Length: 387
Image 1: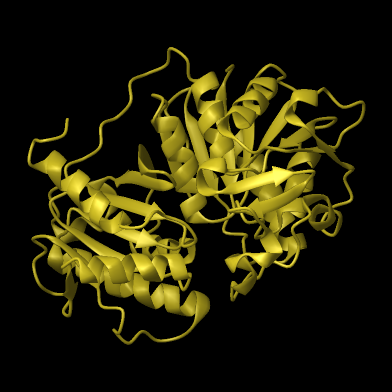
Image 2: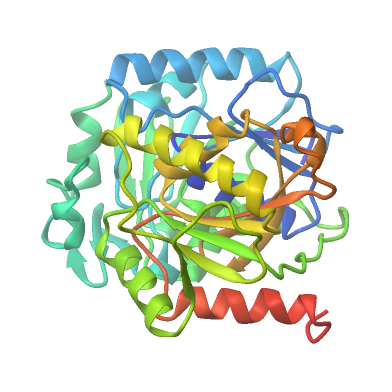
């Protein structure tokens, strides 16, 4: 890969997923909500969270153009647009905005994420075998899925030409367009990634399954993967109303992980945020309120890490911590990213002596028993069992 990579995501958990994929393959990856952040070198990865998931399409497009303009600085490199695996957000308008910054370039959009049950056949997204609009995501309170056809969804959001193609029939288009790739297995994603990598005039787009395959191809011979940190204590916060994340909280509680009823006690283990704790407001206001409470918990309890479910809640917490730059470590489970927040960036007046780690995932996925798995794996590193 000539030059670095600039990646854009419309929410924070998505941005952290992308950073984790490249960190897994030895690249220095930083995640920021501020486009003026600089990376360490030409092979570095800069992932920007534009926070446009819930913005209107015109506003989202404007922010994407501004972030790209400020982040590019005239440097050559690759560009990636992270999209939600269940088609939430302003995908069409943001892809068009990105293409408008690069005259004559087309976008290869690979929406499938087979490892999480998201597959695409004839341009239709399925979740665990069911069309998206018939899945649990049709009940999402903020972004209910009403369309499963990706071309139909994009047609309502962009004026760009949209074409659907099988991955084994990928070829450079004769005019700028969005090429939507079918995909039902990891091999399909790998094939699409190799096609994108062989043509520098293409912009890549898709969920982190595509980023994972691109990271393998673009990172050959570069760097050494950063090891996972030892985490003795962790505060677990669920900010998602999705049944999957609610189940994770319930499973953890039933497995004996303690519920924190006070936020001013010293953290000495993995504990759950009290789901019944009163928090003011709804939506963004609620996430900001949770963020302030978590900041107090970090200051007084001094945990090694935070485990957060839900992009909006993760962003609210990051805001309360002063919007520090995050340094990607890698994945600890599919879709679960680990990042480091330097101690110098977290309210130095607290007197904290070590970095804080953030473990994050989107609300809508995760295997059964996820919290217990994360606790056992990361605590075992602390105990010297896992290297």
